[in-house]
Length: 133
Image (cartoon, rainbow, N blue to C red; front, side):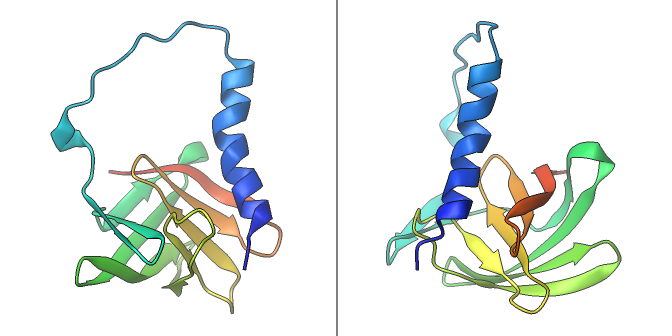
């Protein structure tokens, strides 16, 4: 199933800031050890990411606990606004790690440089720019 609203949202995350910025950015060398390891199965990416507290924009935070088997994240447990949710891995068109709880509608997108918690019904971000602390 193609999730075009999610793809459009993720595209906007990268395109819109570039359109609004007029400052020049210097190239930064990234040490190979700073890039998380990943595996690729069935067209889906799995990054070696940490469990723990993620600090997000506007002072929000999301707790993330990963269930990993054979180097693949199968589900995550999210602590959000005093409640815990179990999100199952949902194969995404882009291959990026996407986890969803169909009961609550929460969606967690796992990227090496940040995480995003979405309202799966509206595809609007609940917590953005979440980084492991």
